[in-house]
Amino acid sequence: MPKISPGEDLGDRMTIHVLTGGQFAAIRSQFMSKSIKPGSPLIACAVAVDGKVIGAFAYLPPKFDENTAYLMSDFPVSWTRYRRLAKLSERLSCGTGVRCLR
Image 1 (cartoon, rainbow, N blue to C red):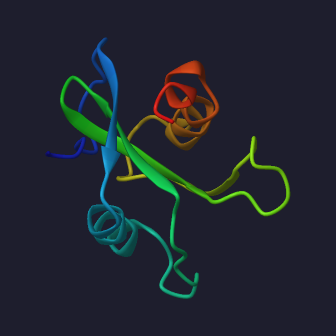
Image 2: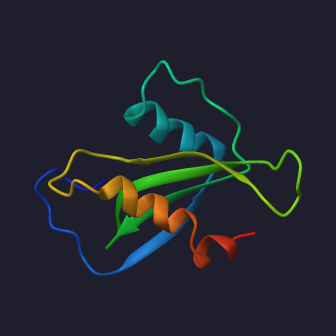
């Protein structure tokens, strides 16, 4: 799936796509600092708008309460003119759609 380009406008149709561990690792290695140690996510997702990836997020398995999870990572996949794109991915990661993926 292609990612959003720096000058591109965001569309209206937002979707969440479950990623394999390998897919998340590939996206993470492109857009996160190499100094941040990778983890093994319980579930990882890409956030897309009109079929173009704008961000990704992942959760670690729960440590103490089986009804909770730790948001280990959330990040935009490109520099764009939308300064708050990371916040959009973060808000989606805590939304109802993600709870339905369990």
